[in-house]
Length: 286
Ligand SMILES: NC(=O)c1ccc[n+]([C@@H]2O[C@H](COP(=O)([O-])OP(=O)(O)OC[C@H]3O[C@@H](n4cnc5c(N)ncnc54)[C@H](OP(=O)(O)O)[C@@H]3O)[C@@H](O)[C@H]2O)c1
Image 1 (tube, rainbow, N blue to C red):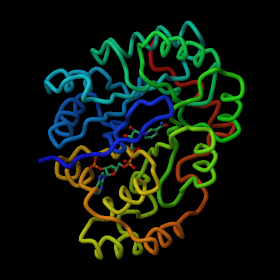
Image 2: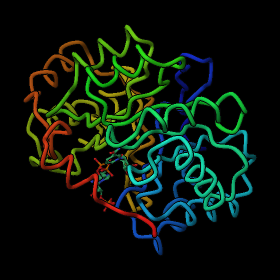
Image 3: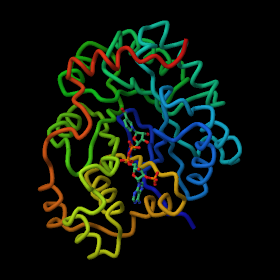
């Protein structure tokens, strides 16, 4: 029996599994196998993006699984190159075709760059048409998020941001709670940076529960009501990463992990002008 993953309820009533499977940096030729393994391990929520180049492989794994569509939660993301009202609509159709789906569960603006107001208008229309069940954003700092909320009809259902023990985003989460935006973590393991998997505090807490560091980190995020999407290409780790619903971290353990926060990104700051320019120039199709 696969572990049962609880849902969070988004502000528009849509149910989203609190734990899913991320496929960033899985090469397209390995993605079908990885997603098939994840579905076999019990994952029902998959997070991809047009920019990952593996939507078609995700779609093949979904089709081959035979799992009823309404039991799956599929997220993809709109890249900067496709920002704007018309371009976003075209990109959405392309993603659906790649995924082999006729509707999406969650569509995110991948980065807060380019004409994302135009993108948001297109996404509001897609939501109204029922082509997507929820729309949201990613990598939005509080100022960008509030601005988008203030000047549009639909509040983003989700903001997917870098969140892990070394960058915990507590102030961001408080604000998102006020706005009704679900906090979703990317890089929950910080991709292993800062020696996360051998961190003494996390290791000690894991030993107390007979769980791995990875499981402690995921459990800590889930207990903070943060949606998590760990990535792994190894079936044994996929099984381990979904098995985090049979133990609870104590208040003291939660407080010890809170003490690991550095308040800074381990990747890059989305407000850095150099990075804004670099990412803005990344093209994913002709
Ligand atoms: N919106 C955005 O801008 C954005 C940015 C980055 C990521 N994301 C999303 O977030 C997802 C997760 O983030 P991520 O892929 O960057 O990194 P991550 O989940 O923090 O870390 C993945 C790394 O951890 C290893 N790992 C996984 N489970 C493990 C375990 N139980 N024990 C030890 N090592 C383990 C993996 O290695 P193996 O694969 O070899 O097991 C891989 O090297 C992505 O896949 C993507 O869907 C979004």
